[in-house]
Image 1 (cartoon, rainbow, N blue to C red):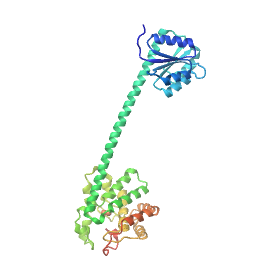
Image 2: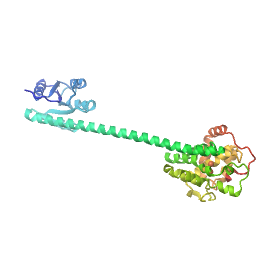
Image 3: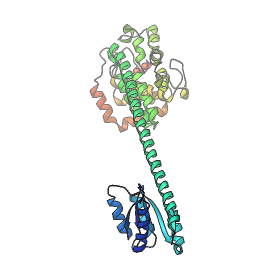
Image 4: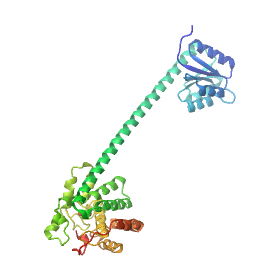
Length: 372
Ligand SMILES: [Fe+2]
Ligand SMILES: [Fe+2]
């Protein structure tokens, strides 16, 4: 009486007697068995597969047209889950070793005795099951990692959105208080981004400078309206009050941990290369690069679009002013990068001016807008 077994095995040999012998032996042991007399026929069987998948292929090595090794390579490519065990005459040992090297589970030499072959087949099947389990577990782990990564990515995106919305809300607060700065922060942020990209800063650094551009003047929210929107000349005391805005900005954005570098840039955006700026009088490269970029972008917007305290200038005057103050007020390398940007993207700067008509409406109280 045959024992009920689970695995389905394909026997491949061009020797009909050998096929019959093996099929009979395996069937008597309870395996579900099919046979083929060539490599091509074997592939047809495997592709058909039927209601139960094959677990193992027992193949002869020397067969016409497609030998056992070629058949095994085909199986590895199209059905990697199926194990291959080779049967070889003891005169073909070199070939059998090559088959093992290429991934055969075992090789059995002909002639063989049933009591010896059956445990080897059972062992080969155990390896097939083990490899299948491993593959399934790996797939399970990969799926788990993929899901977790997707969840983290989505969380990161929503946090980043929250972060940008927070920045936007702060910017709107200052714009609501001082109508003259409407759009200023966004434009400065754009110039900052383009200068930073022109200077080939890394992606994270470009983002820090972009954020700093948006937030650099939020401290003006803490300056009284009378001083902030005054159209006549400021007194020394009033000017001293205005000079507090970088530190007030810093205080406002202090709790936002993510703004680590941007905070520095905001704090130092009125420092000057020669050390005559504020709040700390930093000099040269002691001023963070992002703050040096912000300083050029900020001054450009004031000159190009104009403010309530001075008129807008034409581009030649703006470029001339930068040239004059390069190496004293501004970092020369930043000014050079910005000059290249103006040449390369002049049309975009003209469009910005068209979209933001100059705001100046009273006699300019200052000869030089860079003095504030
Ligand atoms: Fe400022
Ligand atoms: Fe500004």
